[in-house]
Each structure stands twice: as C-alpha cells, then as structure tokens.
Length: 285
Figure 1 (tube, rainbow, N blue to C red):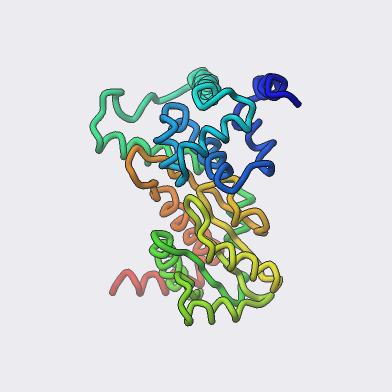
Figure 2: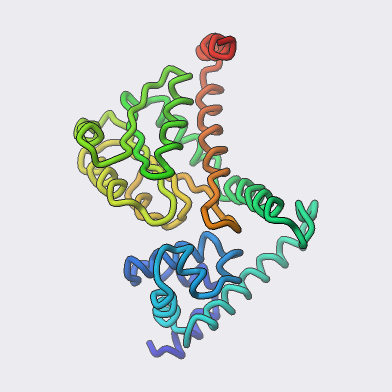
C-alpha cells in the first residue's frame, strides 16, 4: 500500500483505532509512542515531538519515524489527526449533560495537577468493566499464593497492595528487584500461584520475565497497567487499566491507588462477616 493510500485509510477511522489496528507492525520504541498516544490522547494532541518522546521514554526521531510508519509526512500531520480525534471526542462529551470543568481554564500548577487526577479517576472508572474487577477480586480471594511484582515506583504500590491484603488475612510476597531473594520467590511460582504485575510506562524486563515464567508454570496472572496495549498484559488472564495522565514531569498514580483500594474493598465486601472483626481490631490499634 502506498503512503497516500495508507494515509487515506487512516483518515477513515480515528487515529487511536488505526494505531491499535497496526500495533504489531511497530518496533518496540514505536510501540511505546503508540501506547502513549492511545492512552494519553488529550496530552499527546498538544505535545511537541520532543515532549511526546520524553513522555514515551524514547527519542524525537522515533516519534518522527512512527509518524511516517503510519503514512503521515511527519509528526505535524500525526498531531493534527490526534487533535481532530480529541475535538471529536470532546464534542461528543459536551453533547451530554456535564457538570463542567473542575477548575477554570487559567489554573495554577496545583489545580492543573488535581484536575488531571480527577480526570484520571473518571477515565479509569469508565474503561474498567464490572466483570474485570469482579474477576480480579475472585482471583485474589481464591489464590493459594500471591506474588506481586513491581519495580521502581511500582514497588511502593506492590507493598501497599500487600499491606491491604494482609489486613484481610491474605498473605502476599513481593518481587521488587533482581536480587537473589526476589528471584527465589519467582522460582517458587506454580499453578496455584496468582502473579500480579504492576506496570507504568515501558515494562521493566523483570516484569516481562515474571509474566513469561508465570505463563510457563501455568500460574494465574493479573496485569495492572497504565497502557491498554501493555506488553505485560498481552498474555495475562486478567488485566486492569488505570489512567496516569499528568501535566507534571512524572506520571500520576492517583487512579492506581484508588484501584488498589477498590480491590481491597471488593475482597472485604465478598465476605464482610469474616473480615469485620479483624478490621475493627486493626482500627483500634
């Protein structure tokens, strides 16, 4: 197909749909750009090639090559397609009843950050289905052993998830590094283990290794990621998405924290009579 024909095909559908349709054709770095555009369209539509590259943890030349791989002359044409999709989606939203923006357009950095977190919670709730959440809760409740894998900033959320599970008398182990003890925990994965992988941005090699091992050992798997086309989620039995848009230099984890809380609440509600005395005792400490 010629570049002109490819571009015409892209114009017949949204940019996000076209990217997802051709996702498997891209290089690994181009996939990072693809994931960021699809999951953060409201940001990507107004970023320069350099800014988009920084957010997607790649180079501006990769952004340009990705644009050309889609059939555009360069990044400005891709950006225009992103803007058109963003405006179309915004018009559809404005057609429904709306409470309006949380803050005025001329807002401070604090208001911008809080507004983004508010939007992330809405976006996460909108993209998750009841079946996905119920499936994750059931997997946690029925697992004989739970191993949570999270590195860098995700190590904190792995620890917090383990803490909330311990309050419900569910024991979990954490793999947060390539150290000997962590690898020993991975080595004990079997078909009665639930492996939970927490991912933000490009998947760390340890996460991919853990998921590959889990699949090889026929373990149950749950991927929690801010990329709807996440590498760690490709072979997982269960996946949960959280939105992490942020005007700051770092991704927002507000929706991830809320998701961990929601899973814990779902477990508690599943057998409230069993858990309420234990939780009451914890609160009295």
